[in-house]
Length: 327
Image 1 (tube, helix red, strand yellow):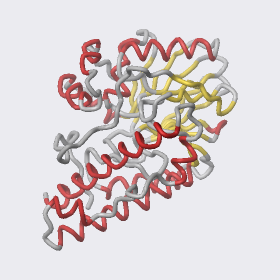
Image 2 (spheres, rainbow, N blue to C red):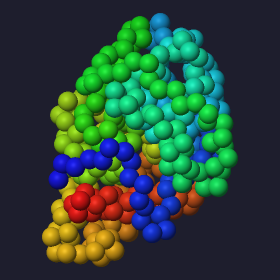
Image 3 (cartoon, helix red, strand yellow):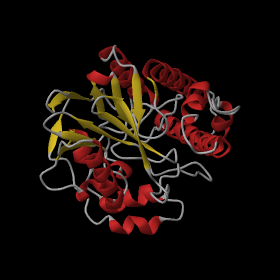
């Protein structure tokens, strides 16, 4: 069903725990994907990743972090990675963990994103409350967020930014995790920053609609970027783009089919949770295990933490898809 919501659903499954996104303990580990192209990987997945892309004339940062303090940390890292001044900041989504740091960037840095993200950035109080569920007791750290600076420049389908010998493409393929999921594609690295739109391991976060629109958007991305080799998701490890897209399509197709069948059979929401396949019941898929192996964090800590997060997100996805099908 092609149904979307006008804002993030506030309902959560019983006992739901969102992914741990508190900035406490967050450090970034730079990973060079090509000359001038750096993934800034959170040392504690699934906290937020970022990125720095540089040309001869300017540099571009991807996502500003969950607090102004994290945004300042990203800017210091950028200054150490390239002599080019940061002139652009791209928000892959409107969610606060990707945008609350916007205000800490200088006024002469142009913030760019999809139009729907700018339109969604109107209620700071509600957004802070939504993200507080992922702060794991560190809610007070969001007190530093007093201004929600929105994009200065928006696009509708795609645009390009020339940094001087380094061209960056921004793309919107349709509604996914949110209404304005912005994919940042760097042809020189055959890599894309995908925010909450595509992650490794078939992970999805359906917050503003069902699998139908999301599936269509993911298929458009797959067809539009045939040369794409790697993704840098907003959360979690870098991975193979073809594998990640295929895993996500498989997950969304199965979720849509199983929930639709449950609703047709008259099952309650609780019964639907039990009836739907949990793809993580027996553990993490190989693509995620391979990705997590690159972290210095002990695997006996990283794997259970990530497994808990993705299983909780699956329960949320079942709930949202059920609400879509039941109106």
